[in-house]
Length: 270
Image 1: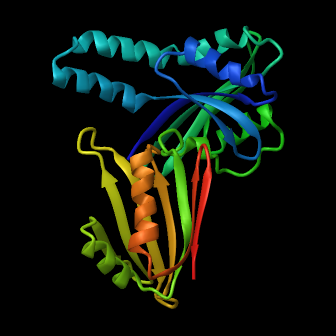
Image 2 (image 1 turned 90 degrees about the vertical axis):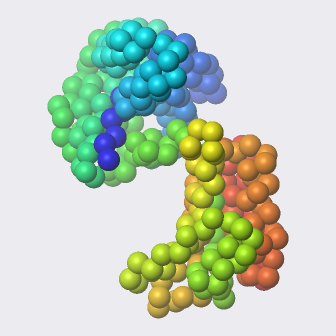
Image 3 (image 1 turned 60 degrees about the vertical axis):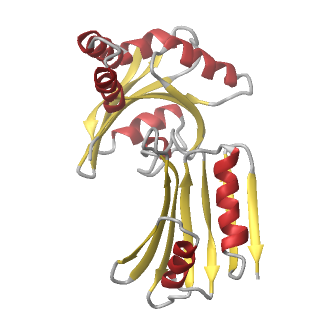
């Protein structure tokens, strides 16, 4: 599966930088903007090329838009992005902005881009597998390692995460409990690991509301590790997850934490 995004990145330096987020949203069409913590505190604005083209196809399907006009607008957004980063840097002449083009296919990613300051390109990086490291180090020299969370698929869509441990319970037994309560869980035996996947799919937009994984190693089958992503932090969705923990898991031993963008909740039972 391919992953093609273009990003503008800078450091988050002051509390007033929340206003910078608004400036980026106003200047760049079709952009998602978010703060991040990944070796350093920063701000990233990102467009997803595949999503922009997909939106045109959706409009065509709904017969609400001329597909040719939509595709032309999409191409303009995509191909003008890098130049707009240079133009945008003039608004904040003392700050460095990175433009990074990410192109991934088959698990291999290539990164290229430049650093802009006050309307000029002051550093360039040709396409290679560690190009993002060299570019991000120009923004903050403390950045290290190849992993950068804002370049993961769920960074902009997830609203929170869930993690924890369930003890003295097997994945098969857990799956049985979930099935008993008419939840759409699925059990997998992956050799050394058994796993239960529980998801909630929105029937209208066909996107996940949450994705939960319960996994146990066969050499320790009654210690289940829970990890998951919450894509919708609306109160009914959080209430449903809480109901699973407090009521469906009411006879189990667990230590579970839900970390949302706005708050953190912990659940513990022995």
